[in-house]
Image (cartoon, rainbow, N blue to C red):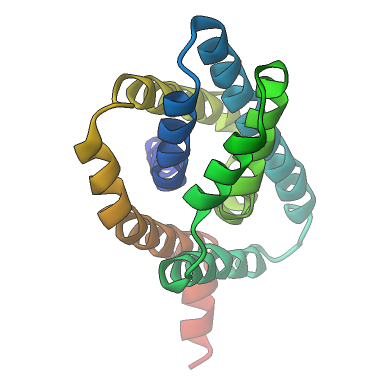
Length: 203
């Protein structure tokens, strides 16, 4: 159980470096109390939708008879992490463009769109392999960990909106931290499912 929960913690932290920068940008754009509440609600809702989609896919994947086959899903976060590291795409610029077009009335829905658009593919690439190989008996505890980490990230982003060194740190090292976590978790999924051991046995 401890190992499952620690992996849940690591996997969710692995998806938050980009999202932290997104939240910094959004909180910097909208500073009113009502706007802050809308941003927070939209952030929770957007992340909940991503987790729900990953869970539904993972439940279907659990019907695969050989568990070692599921381990090949671990390749997905490894590839995504490496691709993101060498990619020239700038998610923060996309978020800035979206914010420039937004208005207060649609802030909740726009925050959901920003969450899914900026982080959806990466998060699903990490969540689906994890949920597919995890023991879902611990799902309530896993979800509580996700909520706790997201709450901390939102709180820190709101408090550190005007703190320039934070922006600089995540712009410089966020991708490096993320690619390491993605690769480690991808390998863990392959090892936990027995894929690596099975491939070695074929040699």
